[in-house]
Image (tube, rainbow, N blue to C red; front, side, top):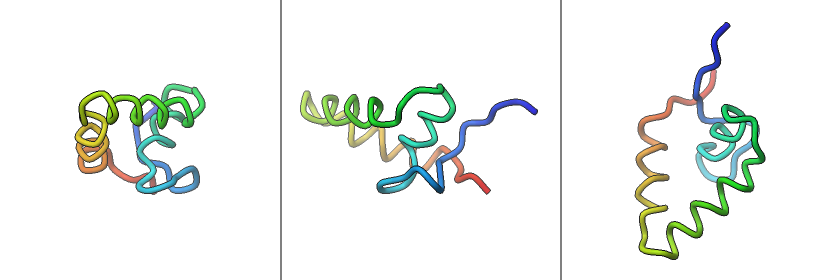
Length: 61
């Protein structure tokens, strides 16, 4: 079965976006969370990216 990008139900803090990305790319979700925090502090794009991912990435079943 092909890998699919989904928001995580088990590894989540808010919506499971970082957990799902971490599972998909096989990296620690904490790294993705840190990158989003840095992007947010550098101009606010992290919040926009997170919200877009929340809307666009379906939740795992």
